[in-house]
Length: 509
Image (cartoon, rainbow, N blue to C red; front, top):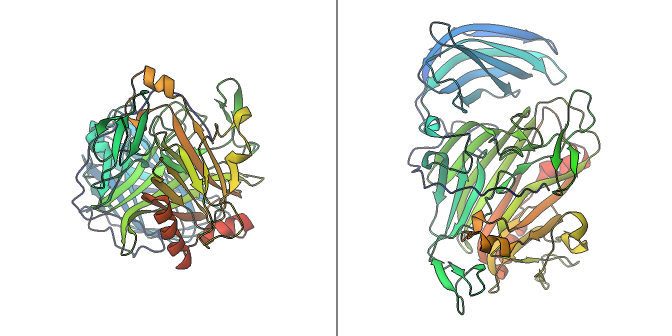
């Protein structure tokens, strides 16, 4: 629910995704090994070493594994406890050194990490040692079998991470179907920064008043783009469609940052892992990314929103996929995973954004169902002039119950983008419309405008430690009645988010 007003962010060009993807066994619905063929790893250490950990115990393994110029690491291992680790690297002659922090979940067998994502240590590397500390309340057995090295196919070294307003071709991934296109940026934690309709006659118009509109027709507007119009707001690292969670403000081991939330008052801000980065536009760290032409997996160590250049002790994972429904056509399915390794006491349950969704202001009307007869095709409600979602301008209309777990941002034709999150009924929505300002500064791309729409499906829970929680959501580009019919079909087929239900009930341990 944070909000920023800063310079816009540019869109990159499509990076061809022609290799087999590389996945992660934390996804319970993904078969182990689905992503194994993404790159070819070479073993650089295979001596094997075991350790029995007590809670809080630390242990250092001496490896001296030569990575040379490779930038992609893989551990094959087993563990029955959670581990907080530090990798120590040196240049071959020992003259240069650096460290990378990482975390291992219990009961997993493979870990991968992109090395030196920020490009601060561009030299041939030797992994001299790893130090592991047992965390999470119980000890256990750990065994490291092999360490492997590869070169990741994405050229991270060519990216200027000090300039988040520029998204290089190598840092922008797309998956494209026959009807829709999804893009995500590796300069902002793997957030969704692009969703468009393709081949369906959806155009971008500049209307006579200078404002932008998106749709199949305009009575008197000028066509700016004939197809493939981005419907996501990517103005800064606080926008996009992304994961964001709120935690402690009172744990003695955590020091809060501050944030100018309403543009006037600097306030103390809670522990807030944000996928895109922090308030200073410093990007989150990409830990792993793999892809196919229709599926992307990304793992991120997010920034702490109110603390510039301070990564959280947290992993976020996303699986993005374009899927074809034989009746309703293409849609986007997203699986989100979060694991907090901080050990902080997060206290009272808080509203969590599931996800934070920032859309194009050119789709200005909110559609949803708020009444008491869900899934019966009862009348949809429309909100044409929602105010800003926070502060003095917010109204009862910005917080509501969406009885069918979905909303859509639409145009005057009732066409737009729908968001469905099973088992989540509470919504926070609103608009920030500074259209005259956007017009004055000549912003003619909806994704770059300061004006934006916003929705956060909300559930109240306290973040668990050392437990992976997850949820799935769906995006549909269509006329609202068709999107609603599709979401109804998902509901009727049993779409659910059981982990969220357990979190809200306090039953996920």
